[in-house]
Image (cartoon, rainbow over all chains, first blue to last red; front, side, top):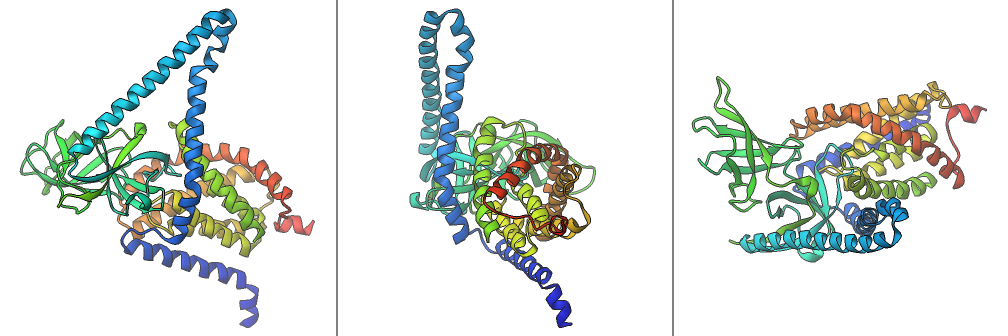
Length: 272
Length: 172
Protein backbone atom coordinates (compact mmCIF):
# COMPACT_ATOMS: atom_id res chain seq x y z
CA UNK A 1 0.00 0.00 0.00
CA UNK A 2 2.83 2.34 0.99
CA UNK A 3 4.66 1.48 -2.22
CA UNK A 4 1.57 2.33 -4.21
CA UNK A 5 1.18 5.62 -2.35
CA UNK A 6 4.86 6.45 -2.93
CA UNK A 7 4.49 5.64 -6.61
CA UNK A 8 1.46 7.83 -7.05
CA UNK A 9 2.39 10.57 -4.61
CA UNK A 10 2.54 13.28 -7.29
CA UNK A 11 -0.89 12.33 -8.55
CA UNK A 12 -2.23 12.42 -4.99
CA UNK A 13 -0.59 15.78 -4.41
CA UNK A 14 -2.29 17.16 -7.53
CA UNK A 15 -5.61 15.64 -6.50
CA UNK A 16 -5.26 17.34 -3.11
CA UNK A 17 -4.44 20.59 -4.95
CA UNK A 18 -7.56 20.11 -7.07
CA UNK A 19 -9.60 19.58 -3.90
CA UNK A 20 -8.07 22.78 -2.48
CA UNK A 21 -9.04 24.62 -5.68
CA UNK A 22 -12.62 23.32 -5.36
CA UNK A 23 -12.79 24.37 -1.70
CA UNK A 24 -11.33 27.79 -2.55
CA UNK A 25 -13.90 28.33 -5.29
CA UNK A 26 -16.75 27.04 -3.16
CA UNK A 27 -15.70 29.26 -0.24
CA UNK A 28 -15.46 32.37 -2.44
CA UNK A 29 -18.80 31.56 -4.03
CA UNK A 30 -20.62 31.48 -0.72
CA UNK A 31 -19.07 34.57 0.83
CA UNK A 32 -19.98 38.15 -0.09
CA UNK A 33 -17.74 39.80 -2.72
CA UNK A 34 -14.28 40.47 -1.32
CA UNK A 35 -10.81 40.97 -2.74
CA UNK A 36 -8.08 38.79 -1.26
CA UNK A 37 -4.40 39.64 -0.85
CA UNK A 38 -3.37 37.77 -4.03
CA UNK A 39 -5.94 39.64 -6.15
CA UNK A 40 -5.05 42.99 -4.53
CA UNK A 41 -1.34 42.45 -5.18
CA UNK A 42 -1.79 41.43 -8.82
CA UNK A 43 -4.22 44.31 -9.50
CA UNK A 44 -1.84 46.75 -7.78
CA UNK A 45 1.17 45.49 -9.73
CA UNK A 46 -0.52 45.36 -13.13
CA UNK A 47 -2.52 48.61 -12.87
CA UNK A 48 0.38 50.89 -13.99
CA UNK A 49 1.17 48.40 -16.76
CA UNK A 50 -2.46 48.31 -17.94
CA UNK A 51 -2.79 52.10 -17.73
CA UNK A 52 0.51 52.59 -19.54
CA UNK A 53 -0.35 50.09 -22.27
CA UNK A 54 -3.78 51.67 -22.79
CA UNK A 55 -2.22 55.12 -23.03
CA UNK A 56 0.54 54.04 -25.40
CA UNK A 57 -1.97 52.16 -27.58
CA UNK A 58 -4.26 55.18 -27.67
CA UNK A 59 -1.34 57.40 -28.65
CA UNK A 60 -0.25 54.90 -31.30
CA UNK A 61 -3.77 54.72 -32.75
CA UNK A 62 -3.99 58.52 -32.81
CA UNK A 63 -0.57 58.70 -34.45
CA UNK A 64 -1.61 56.14 -37.03
CA UNK A 65 -4.84 57.96 -37.77
CA UNK A 66 -3.20 61.37 -37.79
CA UNK A 67 -0.08 60.75 -39.81
CA UNK A 68 0.69 57.36 -41.22
CA UNK A 69 -2.28 57.02 -43.57
CA UNK A 70 -1.32 60.33 -45.11
CA UNK A 71 2.17 59.12 -46.13
CA UNK A 72 1.03 58.27 -49.67
CA UNK A 73 -0.49 61.69 -50.19
CA UNK A 74 2.63 63.30 -48.84
CA UNK A 75 4.61 61.95 -51.76
CA UNK A 76 2.22 63.72 -54.15
CA UNK A 77 2.22 67.04 -52.45
CA UNK A 78 4.61 67.53 -49.59
CA UNK A 79 3.99 71.13 -48.83
CA UNK A 80 0.23 70.85 -49.01
CA UNK A 81 0.20 67.73 -46.94
CA UNK A 82 2.28 69.33 -44.25
CA UNK A 83 -0.38 71.97 -43.86
CA UNK A 84 -3.09 69.37 -44.17
CA UNK A 85 -1.44 67.16 -41.59
CA UNK A 86 -1.19 70.01 -39.14
CA UNK A 87 -4.79 70.98 -39.77
CA UNK A 88 -5.88 67.36 -39.59
CA UNK A 89 -4.00 66.87 -36.39
CA UNK A 90 -5.51 69.99 -34.91
CA UNK A 91 -8.96 69.05 -36.11
CA UNK A 92 -8.73 65.52 -34.74
CA UNK A 93 -7.33 66.85 -31.52
CA UNK A 94 -10.13 69.42 -31.36
CA UNK A 95 -12.74 66.81 -32.20
CA UNK A 96 -11.29 64.50 -29.59
CA UNK A 97 -11.27 67.29 -27.02
CA UNK A 98 -14.76 68.32 -28.00
CA UNK A 99 -16.03 64.73 -27.77
CA UNK A 100 -14.28 64.25 -24.45
CA UNK A 101 -15.67 67.55 -23.23
CA UNK A 102 -19.15 66.54 -24.28
CA UNK A 103 -18.82 63.13 -22.61
CA UNK A 104 -17.44 64.65 -19.42
CA UNK A 105 -20.14 67.35 -19.47
CA UNK A 106 -22.79 64.67 -19.71
CA UNK A 107 -21.10 62.76 -16.93
CA UNK A 108 -20.89 65.93 -14.85
CA UNK A 109 -24.59 66.67 -15.40
CA UNK A 110 -25.36 63.08 -14.55
CA UNK A 111 -23.14 63.30 -11.47
CA UNK A 112 -25.14 66.29 -10.28
CA UNK A 113 -28.33 64.34 -10.78
CA UNK A 114 -27.01 61.32 -8.84
CA UNK A 115 -28.09 61.51 -5.25
CA UNK A 116 -24.97 60.86 -3.18
CA UNK A 117 -21.22 61.07 -3.65
CA UNK A 118 -19.77 59.80 -6.93
CA UNK A 119 -16.17 59.23 -8.03
CA UNK A 120 -15.33 59.58 -11.75
CA UNK A 121 -13.17 56.82 -13.23
CA UNK A 122 -11.75 55.72 -16.57
CA UNK A 123 -12.04 52.26 -18.10
CA UNK A 124 -8.53 50.82 -18.44
CA UNK A 125 -9.10 47.23 -19.53
CA UNK A 126 -11.69 44.60 -20.38
CA UNK A 127 -12.17 40.99 -19.26
CA UNK A 128 -9.39 38.57 -20.22
CA UNK A 129 -11.87 36.02 -21.60
CA UNK A 130 -14.89 36.39 -23.83
CA UNK A 131 -17.36 34.56 -21.63
CA UNK A 132 -17.48 37.09 -18.83
CA UNK A 133 -18.48 40.73 -18.97
CA UNK A 134 -16.21 42.68 -16.64
CA UNK A 135 -14.08 45.80 -17.02
CA UNK A 136 -11.31 47.35 -14.94
CA UNK A 137 -11.43 51.01 -13.90
CA UNK A 138 -8.59 53.19 -12.62
CA UNK A 139 -10.08 53.98 -9.20
CA UNK A 140 -9.85 51.77 -6.14
CA UNK A 141 -9.89 51.79 -2.36
CA UNK A 142 -7.63 54.87 -2.29
CA UNK A 143 -10.53 56.81 -3.82
CA UNK A 144 -13.10 55.28 -1.49
CA UNK A 145 -14.28 52.58 -3.88
CA UNK A 146 -15.37 49.32 -2.19
CA UNK A 147 -16.90 46.06 -3.40
CA UNK A 148 -20.58 46.10 -4.37
CA UNK A 149 -20.78 49.79 -5.26
CA UNK A 150 -22.93 50.88 -8.22
CA UNK A 151 -21.11 52.04 -11.36
CA UNK A 152 -22.99 54.26 -13.80
CA UNK A 153 -22.41 56.21 -17.00
CA UNK A 154 -24.27 59.20 -18.39
CA UNK A 155 -26.65 56.96 -20.31
CA UNK A 156 -27.40 54.50 -17.51
CA UNK A 157 -26.26 51.70 -15.25
CA UNK A 158 -22.92 50.04 -16.04
CA UNK A 159 -22.63 47.48 -13.25
CA UNK A 160 -21.20 47.03 -9.78
CA UNK A 161 -17.70 46.72 -8.36
CA UNK A 162 -16.65 43.19 -7.45
CA UNK A 163 -12.89 43.41 -6.76
CA UNK A 164 -11.11 46.48 -5.42
CA UNK A 165 -7.39 47.11 -5.12
CA UNK A 166 -5.72 50.38 -4.07
CA UNK A 167 -5.76 52.03 -7.48
CA UNK A 168 -8.02 49.88 -9.62
CA UNK A 169 -11.28 47.94 -9.42
CA UNK A 170 -13.05 45.30 -11.45
CA UNK A 171 -16.64 46.00 -12.41
CA UNK A 172 -19.21 43.31 -13.19
CA UNK A 173 -21.30 44.64 -16.08
CA UNK A 174 -25.09 44.27 -15.99
CA UNK A 175 -24.84 42.17 -19.16
CA UNK A 176 -22.84 39.41 -17.42
CA UNK A 177 -24.84 36.24 -16.80
CA UNK A 178 -24.17 36.41 -13.07
CA UNK A 179 -25.54 39.95 -12.77
CA UNK A 180 -29.10 40.45 -11.55
CA UNK A 181 -30.58 43.90 -10.90
CA UNK A 182 -33.97 44.62 -9.32
CA UNK A 183 -35.82 46.64 -11.96
CA UNK A 184 -39.11 48.26 -12.98
CA UNK A 185 -40.80 48.90 -16.30
CA UNK A 186 -40.97 52.69 -16.07
CA UNK A 187 -44.37 53.14 -17.74
CA UNK A 188 -46.51 50.73 -15.73
CA UNK A 189 -44.20 49.88 -12.79
CA UNK A 190 -44.06 46.13 -13.46
CA UNK A 191 -41.44 44.68 -11.13
CA UNK A 192 -38.80 42.46 -12.67
CA UNK A 193 -35.23 41.19 -12.29
CA UNK A 194 -32.89 42.22 -15.12
CA UNK A 195 -30.30 39.50 -15.75
CA UNK A 196 -27.43 39.70 -18.20
CA UNK A 197 -27.32 37.43 -21.24
CA UNK A 198 -23.99 38.54 -22.66
CA UNK A 199 -25.14 41.35 -24.94
CA UNK A 200 -28.68 42.06 -23.70
CA UNK A 201 -30.80 41.92 -20.58
CA UNK A 202 -33.43 39.32 -19.86
CA UNK A 203 -36.11 40.63 -17.51
CA UNK A 204 -37.42 37.75 -15.46
CA UNK A 205 -40.41 37.36 -13.14
CA UNK A 206 -42.33 40.21 -14.78
CA UNK A 207 -46.01 39.69 -14.01
CA UNK A 208 -48.15 39.11 -17.11
CA UNK A 209 -51.13 40.96 -15.57
CA UNK A 210 -49.92 44.19 -17.12
CA UNK A 211 -48.38 44.12 -20.57
CA UNK A 212 -44.94 45.57 -21.24
CA UNK A 213 -44.46 47.12 -24.68
CA UNK A 214 -41.50 47.31 -27.03
CA UNK A 215 -39.78 50.64 -26.46
CA UNK A 216 -40.67 50.87 -22.77
CA UNK A 217 -37.79 51.87 -20.53
CA UNK A 218 -36.45 49.63 -17.78
CA UNK A 219 -35.13 51.40 -14.68
CA UNK A 220 -33.63 50.27 -11.37
CA UNK A 221 -36.20 49.74 -8.63
CA UNK A 222 -33.80 50.42 -5.77
CA UNK A 223 -34.85 47.19 -4.04
CA UNK A 224 -31.68 45.17 -4.57
CA UNK A 225 -29.64 47.20 -2.10
CA UNK A 226 -26.90 48.08 -4.58
CA UNK A 227 -28.36 50.51 -7.12
CA UNK A 228 -30.31 53.68 -6.27
CA UNK A 229 -33.87 53.89 -7.61
CA UNK A 230 -34.63 55.32 -11.06
CA UNK A 231 -31.40 54.76 -13.00
CA UNK A 232 -31.89 53.74 -16.65
CA UNK A 233 -31.07 50.09 -17.38
CA UNK A 234 -32.30 49.65 -20.94
CA UNK A 235 -35.11 49.67 -23.47
CA UNK A 236 -37.43 46.76 -24.18
CA UNK A 237 -36.80 45.16 -27.57
CA UNK A 238 -38.98 42.04 -27.33
CA UNK A 239 -41.87 40.79 -25.20
CA UNK A 240 -43.11 37.22 -25.14
CA UNK A 241 -46.23 36.22 -23.28
CA UNK A 242 -46.54 32.44 -23.11
CA UNK A 243 -49.99 30.87 -23.25
CA UNK A 244 -49.62 29.55 -19.73
CA UNK A 245 -47.61 30.70 -16.75
CA UNK A 246 -47.45 33.67 -14.42
CA UNK A 247 -44.80 35.76 -16.12
CA UNK A 248 -43.99 37.40 -19.44
CA UNK A 249 -40.49 37.22 -20.92
CA UNK A 250 -38.95 40.58 -21.66
CA UNK A 251 -35.70 41.25 -23.53
CA UNK A 252 -34.08 44.65 -23.23
CA UNK A 253 -31.17 46.40 -24.87
CA UNK A 254 -28.85 47.99 -22.30
CA UNK A 255 -28.94 51.79 -22.11
CA UNK A 256 -25.14 51.90 -22.09
CA UNK A 257 -23.07 51.07 -25.16
CA UNK A 258 -20.38 48.99 -23.46
CA UNK A 259 -18.16 48.85 -26.54
CA UNK A 260 -17.66 52.61 -26.37
CA UNK A 261 -17.49 53.03 -22.63
CA UNK A 262 -14.60 55.24 -21.52
CA UNK A 263 -15.64 57.21 -18.43
CA UNK A 264 -17.85 56.04 -15.58
CA UNK A 265 -18.99 57.16 -12.15
CA UNK A 266 -18.76 55.01 -9.05
CA UNK A 267 -21.45 55.95 -6.52
CA UNK A 268 -19.47 55.64 -3.30
CA UNK A 269 -22.11 57.10 -0.99
CA UNK A 270 -25.80 56.78 -1.58
CA UNK A 271 -28.11 59.43 -0.17
CA UNK A 272 -30.11 57.98 2.68
CA UNK B 1 9.91 26.54 -9.20
CA UNK B 2 11.87 27.46 -12.33
CA UNK B 3 8.72 26.93 -14.41
CA UNK B 4 6.68 29.12 -12.10
CA UNK B 5 9.19 31.98 -12.14
CA UNK B 6 9.22 31.90 -15.92
CA UNK B 7 5.59 31.27 -16.83
CA UNK B 8 3.86 33.36 -14.12
CA UNK B 9 5.33 36.71 -15.25
CA UNK B 10 4.97 35.70 -18.90
CA UNK B 11 1.30 34.89 -18.37
CA UNK B 12 0.77 38.18 -16.49
CA UNK B 13 2.24 40.13 -19.42
CA UNK B 14 0.11 38.23 -21.93
CA UNK B 15 -3.02 38.82 -19.83
CA UNK B 16 -2.32 42.56 -19.56
CA UNK B 17 -1.78 42.66 -23.32
CA UNK B 18 -5.00 40.81 -24.09
CA UNK B 19 -7.10 42.91 -21.69
CA UNK B 20 -5.75 46.22 -22.98
CA UNK B 21 -4.13 45.97 -26.44
CA UNK B 22 -6.38 43.29 -27.90
CA UNK B 23 -9.65 44.88 -26.81
CA UNK B 24 -8.56 48.23 -28.26
CA UNK B 25 -7.00 47.05 -31.52
CA UNK B 26 -9.22 44.06 -32.36
CA UNK B 27 -12.47 44.62 -30.47
CA UNK B 28 -14.57 42.52 -32.88
CA UNK B 29 -12.43 39.39 -32.55
CA UNK B 30 -12.54 37.35 -29.33
CA UNK B 31 -9.19 37.37 -27.56
CA UNK B 32 -7.18 34.14 -27.33
CA UNK B 33 -6.98 32.28 -24.06
CA UNK B 34 -3.21 32.56 -23.64
CA UNK B 35 -3.28 31.13 -20.11
CA UNK B 36 -4.91 27.95 -21.41
CA UNK B 37 -2.22 27.69 -24.10
CA UNK B 38 0.52 28.00 -21.47
CA UNK B 39 -1.12 25.30 -19.35
CA UNK B 40 -1.38 22.99 -22.39
CA UNK B 41 2.28 23.64 -23.12
CA UNK B 42 3.14 22.86 -19.49
CA UNK B 43 1.05 19.70 -19.73
CA UNK B 44 3.36 18.41 -22.47
CA UNK B 45 6.65 19.78 -21.16
CA UNK B 46 6.70 20.34 -17.40
CA UNK B 47 7.15 17.80 -14.60
CA UNK B 48 3.91 16.67 -12.98
CA UNK B 49 4.34 18.46 -9.63
CA UNK B 50 5.85 21.75 -10.77
CA UNK B 51 3.45 21.95 -13.72
CA UNK B 52 0.46 21.30 -11.46
CA UNK B 53 1.41 24.08 -9.04
CA UNK B 54 2.03 26.35 -12.03
CA UNK B 55 -1.37 25.53 -13.56
CA UNK B 56 -3.13 26.19 -10.25
CA UNK B 57 -1.48 29.59 -9.72
CA UNK B 58 -2.02 30.56 -13.37
CA UNK B 59 -5.70 29.77 -12.82
CA UNK B 60 -5.73 32.05 -9.77
CA UNK B 61 -4.00 34.71 -11.87
CA UNK B 62 -6.63 34.41 -14.60
CA UNK B 63 -9.30 34.82 -11.90
CA UNK B 64 -7.86 38.27 -11.16
CA UNK B 65 -8.36 39.32 -14.78
CA UNK B 66 -11.53 37.46 -15.65
CA UNK B 67 -14.72 36.11 -14.19
CA UNK B 68 -16.45 36.74 -10.92
CA UNK B 69 -15.46 34.15 -8.31
CA UNK B 70 -11.87 33.56 -7.25
CA UNK B 71 -10.80 29.94 -7.71
CA UNK B 72 -12.99 29.19 -10.74
CA UNK B 73 -10.24 29.10 -13.36
CA UNK B 74 -7.82 27.43 -10.93
CA UNK B 75 -10.01 24.29 -10.90
CA UNK B 76 -10.40 24.28 -14.68
CA UNK B 77 -6.75 24.84 -15.57
CA UNK B 78 -5.50 22.33 -12.98
CA UNK B 79 -7.90 19.70 -14.35
CA UNK B 80 -6.79 20.43 -17.93
CA UNK B 81 -3.14 20.20 -16.89
CA UNK B 82 -3.74 16.83 -15.20
CA UNK B 83 -5.53 15.49 -18.28
CA UNK B 84 -2.80 16.72 -20.64
CA UNK B 85 0.04 15.46 -18.45
CA UNK B 86 -1.78 12.15 -18.08
CA UNK B 87 -2.04 11.72 -21.85
CA UNK B 88 1.43 12.87 -22.82
CA UNK B 89 2.99 9.40 -22.40
CA UNK B 90 0.69 8.12 -25.13
CA UNK B 91 1.41 10.99 -27.53
CA UNK B 92 4.39 11.96 -29.62
CA UNK B 93 4.50 15.70 -29.05
CA UNK B 94 6.74 16.16 -32.11
CA UNK B 95 3.86 15.21 -34.38
CA UNK B 96 2.61 18.43 -36.03
CA UNK B 97 -1.00 17.37 -35.50
CA UNK B 98 -0.63 17.29 -31.72
CA UNK B 99 -0.64 21.06 -31.30
CA UNK B 100 -3.88 21.73 -33.23
CA UNK B 101 -5.53 18.72 -31.64
CA UNK B 102 -4.48 19.73 -28.10
CA UNK B 103 -5.67 23.30 -28.70
CA UNK B 104 -9.06 22.16 -30.02
CA UNK B 105 -9.50 19.61 -27.24
CA UNK B 106 -8.21 22.05 -24.60
CA UNK B 107 -10.54 24.85 -25.71
CA UNK B 108 -13.48 22.45 -25.76
CA UNK B 109 -12.56 21.07 -22.34
CA UNK B 110 -12.18 24.59 -20.96
CA UNK B 111 -15.65 25.53 -22.22
CA UNK B 112 -17.35 22.35 -21.02
CA UNK B 113 -15.67 22.47 -17.61
CA UNK B 114 -16.72 26.14 -17.30
CA UNK B 115 -20.34 25.25 -18.05
CA UNK B 116 -20.25 22.24 -15.74
CA UNK B 117 -18.79 24.15 -12.80
CA UNK B 118 -21.02 27.20 -13.30
CA UNK B 119 -24.15 25.07 -13.48
CA UNK B 120 -23.08 22.86 -10.60
CA UNK B 121 -21.91 25.52 -8.15
CA UNK B 122 -23.41 28.88 -9.06
CA UNK B 123 -26.67 30.17 -10.47
CA UNK B 124 -25.32 31.34 -13.84
CA UNK B 125 -27.77 29.13 -15.70
CA UNK B 126 -27.92 31.57 -18.65
CA UNK B 127 -24.24 31.38 -19.45
CA UNK B 128 -24.08 28.06 -21.31
CA UNK B 129 -25.65 29.19 -24.63
CA UNK B 130 -23.22 32.09 -24.66
CA UNK B 131 -20.22 29.81 -24.05
CA UNK B 132 -21.33 27.10 -26.48
CA UNK B 133 -21.98 29.59 -29.28
CA UNK B 134 -18.53 31.12 -28.88
CA UNK B 135 -16.57 27.81 -28.97
CA UNK B 136 -15.92 27.60 -32.78
CA UNK B 137 -14.55 31.16 -32.99
CA UNK B 138 -12.58 30.66 -29.78
CA UNK B 139 -10.99 27.49 -31.21
CA UNK B 140 -9.90 29.36 -34.34
CA UNK B 141 -8.42 32.25 -32.36
CA UNK B 142 -6.69 29.89 -29.92
CA UNK B 143 -5.30 27.83 -32.82
CA UNK B 144 -3.82 30.93 -34.43
CA UNK B 145 -2.37 32.07 -31.11
CA UNK B 146 -0.96 28.58 -30.40
CA UNK B 147 0.82 28.52 -33.76
CA UNK B 148 2.42 31.87 -32.98
CA UNK B 149 3.15 31.36 -29.29
CA UNK B 150 4.38 27.77 -29.20
CA UNK B 151 7.74 28.44 -30.91
CA UNK B 152 8.08 31.48 -28.65
CA UNK B 153 7.43 29.39 -25.50
CA UNK B 154 9.95 26.77 -26.65
CA UNK B 155 12.59 29.33 -27.52
CA UNK B 156 12.14 31.28 -24.31
CA UNK B 157 12.06 28.14 -22.12
CA UNK B 158 15.28 26.88 -23.67
CA UNK B 159 16.72 30.35 -23.29
CA UNK B 160 16.14 30.33 -19.52
CA UNK B 161 17.31 26.72 -19.17
CA UNK B 162 13.99 24.89 -18.74
CA UNK B 163 14.35 21.32 -19.92
CA UNK B 164 11.48 19.32 -21.27
CA UNK B 165 10.39 16.48 -19.03
CA UNK B 166 8.31 14.83 -21.76
CA UNK B 167 8.90 11.06 -21.48
CA UNK B 168 9.77 10.44 -25.14
CA UNK B 169 12.45 13.10 -24.99
CA UNK B 170 13.95 11.74 -21.75
CA UNK B 171 14.13 8.25 -23.24
CA UNK B 172 15.97 9.59 -26.27
